[in-house]
Image (tube, rainbow, N blue to C red; front, side, top):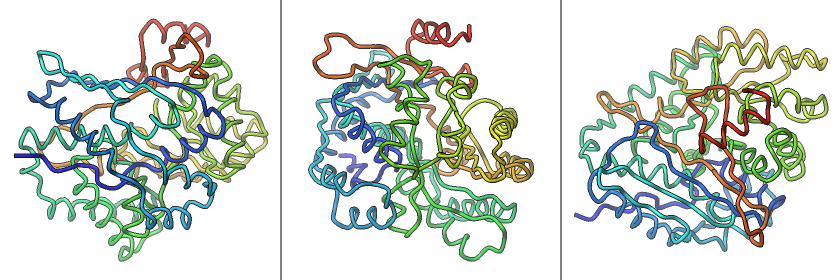
Length: 402
């Protein structure tokens, strides 16, 4: 039996891929990149899995943006320049940029190579395909009770709202299925409309679901922006150059910076008073949440900025309980909000979610360069380092972290 096409909408994707794509075209239009897939659990995939992923990617070549999607993004994403929509109208996925293989034991390999401006839009869609396809091919999709999932999602939203949490769905990449994510978004919007409490379901990172349910698309950037710049120019000033590029494109909009690509120390050295005033807040995506919060608060105070005027977005493997506990502390010193992913979109009883990522691992400034520069991601959690270990060691030495 042929498996249906998994991705059927162009904007069934996270907003940050579009905003970063815009910034890449604006600042690094000729850059070339390589990405690599990692399954942190070294999972064995079903026989024929890589062939089906490749087929799904070929089907993706027929998915184009619609006028309805463009109209929605123009209305809700006013920070994106109109020229970018002309680019999206002409954009076509090219599956030849992606190589998918499977070794005899069943381990999966995915490599992406090409112009940064075009390959940047593959990551989230490929991860969503792999995640949903795995459950289809293992038969676990049949065990997913979406009616019960709606009830449990509503209860999660109720607890967060009553606790005063402002939260968003960040779960596209590792969702159990598109249907599961839509169930979550629909249930949480309905709960937000009926539940009395100081918190709020702010929106979803998934642009298509935001359009369908008239929600705010949520997102800014990912680590890959800083990783690519570090590969081109070195990790010491990568955050600084990324903040400059982001400001060049968005002129103060989309002002939440993801700071942990190379850890707090080097970012803090790059985070000047000018940038602290330009960006409305920071996102915590690794390390101990309370420790990171304390460092952020101390940094703002050292710059003469009241941290209560700044937003801190927490997105580090959160669930409802950990978000509520964080809210109790963070609301006293900043404006906290929470981006929750896998716990929202892949939390079925007995189902083990996939621990998968796609990371940018090499870059060259233009297509005319005859060599690649390796790069990596370090972050505040050693377990979240990505890239070749030798490259990570070199970056750690350059940053005087080893």
